Amino acid sequence: MARGRPRETGCRCVLGVLAAALLLDSAAASYFAPGESPGAKYLAGEAKALAEAAQKQYGRGYTTRIDAGRHIVYVSALDQYTLGRVMGLLGTFADSQRQLLFPRPLPWNVTVVLPTFADYRKPLPRVNAAGHYEAATRVLESISLSDVLLHEFTHALHHADQVQADQRHAVWICEGLASLFQRSTMREGRLEVLLGRDLAGLQEAVKNRKAPAAAALCAMDQPTFLSDANICYAQAHYLMFYLNSQGKLKSFYENYKADYAADRTGAAALAKTLGKPLGEAEADWRRWLLEQEPPWTPARPSKALLGVKMEPAEQGVRVAGLIRGSTAESAGQLKVGDTVVSVAGQSTRTPPDLTAAVQTCQPWETIDIEVIRDGRTMLIRQLLSVMPP
Image (cartoon, rainbow, N blue to C red; front, side, top):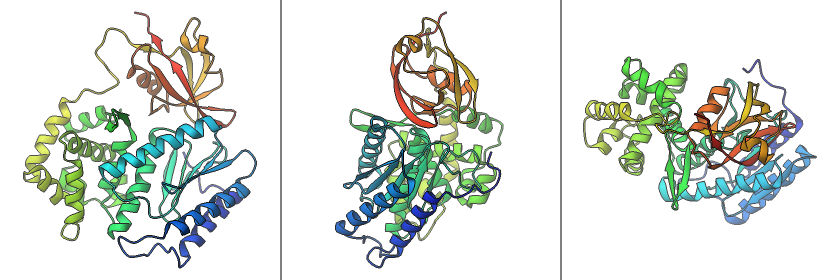
């Protein structure tokens, strides 16, 4: 838990100051008219300036890379293999979103900082946040390389789309879209979203009538939304998931933007897109929600096994030992003392989280595991085995 404002490091301060200074430059001020953006030549120069300043200020152990075509500047403490994987992930995700929801390219550079855990500075008032995106400076910082990273990168893409439309979208739409895409994968060239571990808790809340009505959720401001964050995030997530499952996510977003001046809450766009009064559409959604199978309790005779002994740690789950005869022991990729922070794209903050994430996978499947080793985050590929009966 955050215990007061963290001390700002010199590298963080200078990068923020440089970003702010570049934003105020008359050639690329953030107050350009909707549909306009700085030219490619300016953006290339800005990206180079951001990368040079970051390299100078973050110093030893950090590298910078520029994705000029997508306007992303990377500041990384990762090894080159892992950084390449992350750049491929975000690049593919950005391209997919241009086909799905956000058709225009980023009109500015987004700086993606992938620091060591020691260098990471959690923003307030968020607690235990593994990543964040700051719209004012267009800087995304994350110690997650999976679901949290995709959540915050969705915010970055959505922020750009809002500015270009001269709009500021409702909090449930911002967080619903980010939560929807944080668990997603590419399948046959298309972005596919997956059910998450927040499903069971929301189903319980709906059964017990503890979830707010859709109209109330749509009308919430950010403080109200965050006051019951667990339920509100999950409800926004699965309203978006429902729209996507019906093939209506894109039309909802387009309807919302088109009718934004008349209704900023999104309630009217929901009713319009689903073709029913909001109360009837919400009843359909609740029935659909309760029919979904939580993904971490698959009904199959065999379950996947990672093969590690676990103990809780501040950042995730510490590998306390390797089970004799397991694929984890034979592969030699995982080390005793590693802290596992995600498995197959799912955050693993506790040992039960890790077990649940592994069991969403198939036995003998090779998966990505994100670990912190010697203060640095890295990705490894690990073959799973079968849990004994």
